[in-house]
Amino acid sequence: MIYNRIALFRADRGVSRRDLADAVGVNPQTIGYLERGDYSPSLELAMKIAAYFGVAIEMLFSFNPFESVADTLRRNGESA
Image: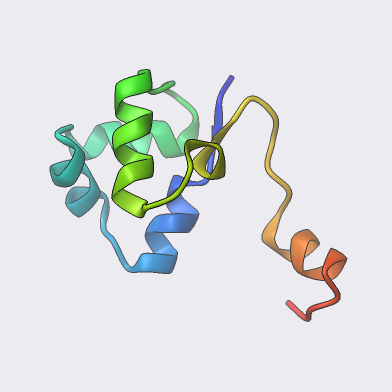
């Protein structure tokens, strides 16, 4: 399984599924499938999504679950 933070990046940037889908050339349903983990992206699609957000692919996709935002903030001594 491939884990992702697409929904987190979309929410942070105020981007809809449709906007992201249009930008990377897929159906909005595909973005939903990716976010839920129902579908693993091709390398090309993963790279397009990372480029859209201007981040390294590892910031969006991982073979291991991502730490929750609350845990990251707690670990860094910030309040959630």
